[in-house]
Length: 470
Ligand code: ARG
Image (cartoon, helix red, strand yellow):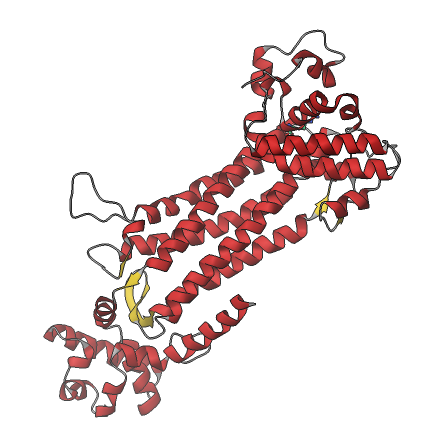
């Protein structure tokens, strides 16, 4: 850490060190210091300080001149941070003391008035909320992009037939567009969960001070408004102690990460030589250093794995918060790194998944061939017996099972079996049976609301186009 422009570190330590005779020992500093990671809160810290200072001046708690000095100093610091020339110092512990120390270098005494009616406890709670809120807004855009990419693939493949699976065994033919829209629905819920978290967390802790409020005539509505919070938090103890906003955001992230991991897993399976359902672009595949033929879906595998660290972050922070008495305890300094790490991981995962989906090419021939395999239209045969011959479904199930066994014995697909063969099992079967036995006929018949028929998928594509364009 450079410390050249820090005039006198030990005098800065006196900001809180008035009753201590010596600087903290090295070990104490090593365990206490957070500037290495909480410098990510710098912009939010400056925003909070500007709002607080303006309010102090409006309430005649500090002078207009002090405010002007503070604003000028903070503006310079903001520029230094953006230009990466700010001299972060471990000795100043955290982002709050680093910025205040730097402000003192720049404007002298007025810097010492900024902290009137405020504590690092409400300051850090405010900074962290602002940071999480900023990131949630970014997630919203990213999620929308991913949803748009999925919608694009769905729209282009409303009648691309593929096998639908249960137990990863061929079950019934579905459309690729339908499969893409299933993920769109999941990510839409994730986006809405993140929006809920944002709405609930958008209250200002600033002005709670250390824990009990302050005797200065502060205006918490004013700072809340300036920082675009909906209202000040109503209980000062809660304001400095609450971290459920971060837990809630992390939970929503963890759920989203599980969805990303499921789609990743499908991509890994689909790109294997055994499946060959889709082709990824070169941009999202890697080669092997030894096997020249390999195209590995590394991005999908890494996204699949990210859920581990995101769940881990949720677990860490839950355990940090568990059993903490009110109000602030230093334990809470451990709240930031898991959130930073998890949010970064999710953001990267969302971006990579969006690119992968956008570039992904379904292999239509291969999907159609696979959809026809393993007697995937057996249910359609049974349904035909029910609908056309008025057979009870359980009997139809039995008859169909016998016909499937017959086809299997002849090494044929169901639609390749002769009418005579089928009639040998159930004499009332007619030529009409062939109208339901192909995978496209099967999928097209599933016109119930939310079903896989191309006609239904087109309706859902239109619905999503409408939602995403507004
Ligand atoms: N760096 C601290 C944190 O992240 C700021 C609050 C410190 N408050 C205190 N009373 N020591 O939690």
